[in-house]
Length: 251
Ligand code: SF4
Ligand code: SF4
Image 1 (cartoon, protein in one colour):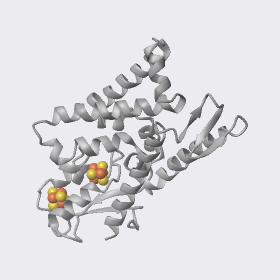
Image 2 (cartoon, rainbow, N blue to C red; image 1 turned 60 degrees about the vertical axis):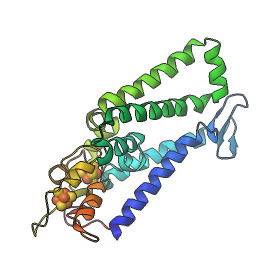
Image 3 (cartoon, helix red, strand yellow; image 1 turned 45 degrees about the vertical axis):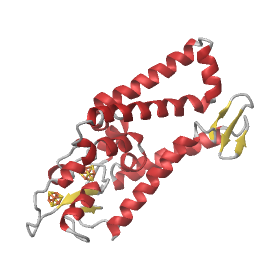
């Protein structure tokens, strides 16, 4: 039951994170260069106050980094669009589909367009972008193309390898990790594991969950635990989130 709560909370936060990203192209949260202000969900911050929301975002990111010392890679599993992408393309149904490559390309194009638009429309509304591109404005064409191709490269070629080895947050997490950082433990004391491999199959990072969930690559997304419950029945799982070496997580 507590695990279901953890998964629900994680998915709710993921949804909110996506909604915040979506609010940028919709111009609820953006720089309004024409009116020299920053729009923050109905508030207009003028020249003297427009940096307050930016400070708030930096503060929030620092908070997440500090929380990572205790909770592990929560930024990845709760907020990052790459994790959302990996949860879709590495879901068992997609992973084993004949059309996986086509699906990866499709999702990569959708996510790359979306994230490119999130960045561009923070500064310019879509209609301005289109008219600037139509008039041959090289800076916006160049920046837009570079962002789109960069995201495509990440989504098509690097995927979870970027998260494990290339992402700056992963590096910070490695430095912050300690014995007291939350981790996903696999324990099979009564030998009830059926070796169904559902936990491996569902892992967005393609980890062998039973053997690698304790490492710094695991994002504590809890999907392996859910897969195990599906196999062993309601209320049963061989995975547990552990807050420290002594104490089991109260999730
Ligand atoms: S090992 Fe489990 S908790 Fe860790 S990333 Fe994979 S599925 Fe998520
Ligand atoms: S999902 Fe559970 S039962 Fe199946 S292989 Fe993984 S640990 Fe074993």
